[in-house]
Image (cartoon, rainbow, N blue to C red; front, side, top):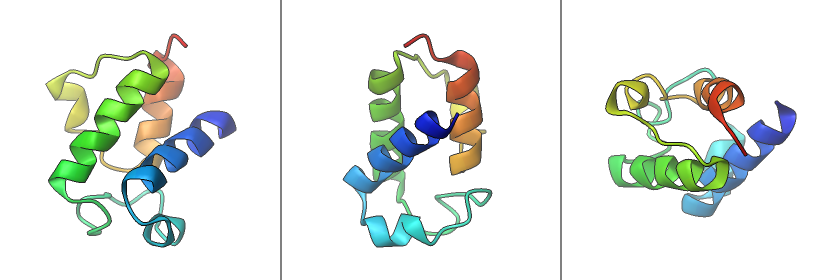
Length: 80
């Protein structure tokens, strides 16, 4: 799971400013905290789909709003 977390943080850092993510609470919503806007969030989700060979459904996306939730989801569902 540590490798998954590191890769997800790397993806987020590639899309936004790393300093913002480095200080964030992994339990809090990336959107609500203002760390990502909706376009950045969509880019993160697409990059995660590509990196981990996933297809995220709309119902899944609604709940994947924090780093910890993303890590947990990818750890359970990734095939790569």
